[in-house]
Picture 1 (cartoon, one colour):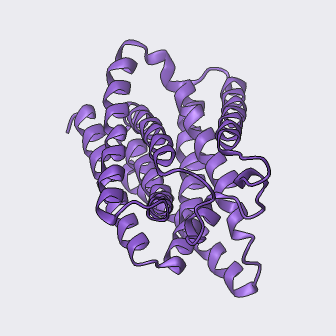
Picture 2: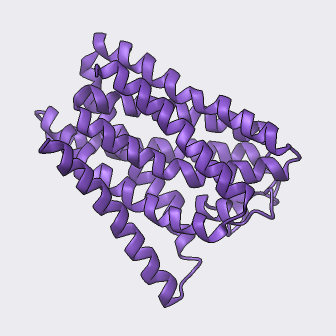
Length: 265
């Protein structure tokens, strides 16, 4: 398949697959499954960042410090963006920014609360997030098919619990199941738009590939460390901790396995 075909297939398949899995989980309220998926997603994101995306960025760069600087700047950018989103939703002290239970994992499992966020803002934010995911997928595939597949798997892994959380928030905001599904379906097509636009853009500006790989690494690391891991600390019991560590290692191992399989194919 051509690179563009890979990007289109990965974007469509990733969006639809994560949406369907998230809908099943959200509609049937499998909270324990969501918690397990969060742990696996952490491993998949960190594995993709440190075992695939960052090494590729270093390989394309003549100056490794430029790559590490890009990652640091990217983490700061994502921190600022998240702060702006929280500030936008704040209502005096009644806000998730002031709520100790705030966090990506907490949002996905604490489905009895809306946290004051409107359904439409959730969709707008998710659409932008999916658009960026499409850019990251396209960037990875334009470097190497194996890297593209690994990056797509990591993105799908963290999209499932995120989409499930969005479903839950939309339902709590008064949307019907059908409307919540349709809105999330439309939002998922932003991944395809971002991927196709990035493909044609990067053909003319291929000097952006290396910094975009650095930003992709920063995105994965930030989501895993800032949004996902804090939620796991809410279950400090030894059996829960062992389960979380095993699933994180499983996520890392699956990325390593996929990467090595395609590297030797």
